[in-house]
Image 1 (cartoon, rainbow, N blue to C red):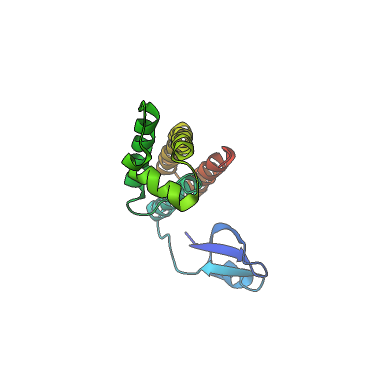
Image 2: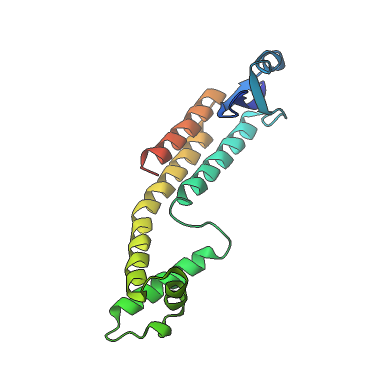
Length: 170
């Protein structure tokens, strides 16, 4: 087995892809391409599978970040804001200041609490609609990589997972 290299266009720096090549080909490629990763990342098929599964997980996070902020503690904020927004919308005569997240955000963004409540609930619903698909694609990709019997099958499974994630408008 060769070495796994991440190769990029030497002029633009744009990644071209991950390739398993032997050291002689790496020397030849280095004249026209930038080898972003030159360390030996994959000694065995299991190492390669681990690498590709990690790549699928990172891609999944990247896709999710188009909908939500992935910072530590942010998920509880989203959950609390959605709960407040729902309670606000269900209240007969809501008092804005009783809904701290909504009230503070309204002040910070020059929006009304009522507008924010609707906006937050819509965003939460949008995420509930797309997230199961994202998760299914992640799980399917990991399963296919784990079932791969050779380097080609593992890379094909990873690439398919990437294209599936990208294909859903995310």
